[in-house]
Amino acid sequence: MAEYQVREMSAMHKDGKTRAYYKVQIKGNITADHLADFMSTTSMGVSKSAIKAVLTQLSSSVAYYLGLGFSVTIDGIGTLSMKIGPKEGKEVEELKEGATKLTATNIEVTDINLRADKDFIREVNKNCRLERGGIKRLKKSSYTEAERLERAKAFMAKYGSMTLLNYVNVNEMSKTSAHRELHKFAEDPESGITYIGRGPKREFVLDKKKLNG
Image (cartoon, rainbow, N blue to C red; front, top):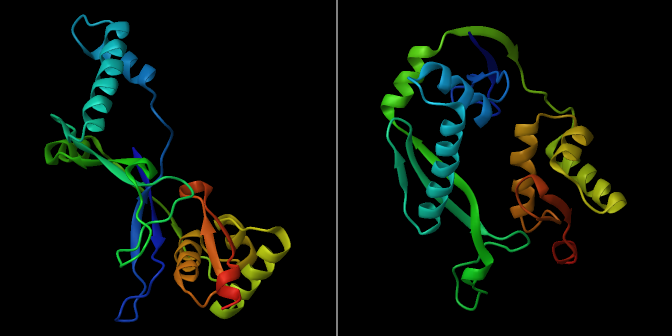
């Protein structure tokens, strides 16, 4: 049985209604070792070690062809492809005259996309028995947006930088709303803040250029 949670969306719709979305509560993670053990008990005479060897070879072979610029389809699961972006510390280039262009050495693989096969989705759905869990509502900040920005800048001035979790705690709001708002500030030339790093390592700092005009 898989349990799901009903969660409140961060944005109100044009009709003024607050919508919900559904998120499965992950019970844990199944490792390759566990998967190979399960497969060996359900297959006809194939050993666990043989299955693990195939899984390892599959992983390295898929990585090889993805690295060459191919997409890779695994029948019954889906199609994988690369997602690329600037290396950590490098900014996305602006497409305007005179702007600094990123060279190929400053671009790297940042993630792998999986477009799931429709038959695979149907197979998962066939095995899925859902059970409704609780309801999670968004934590709404008691501060205005302008106040949240000033509180963030005060934190950065004191500690040098601010993480997403810092912003959540300082302004008492949901992580989803904090993520959207912080990035909006960082892209606003009038906000006085910017960011460094990428992904989970991204931190927000005071932008002296913005502050000094």
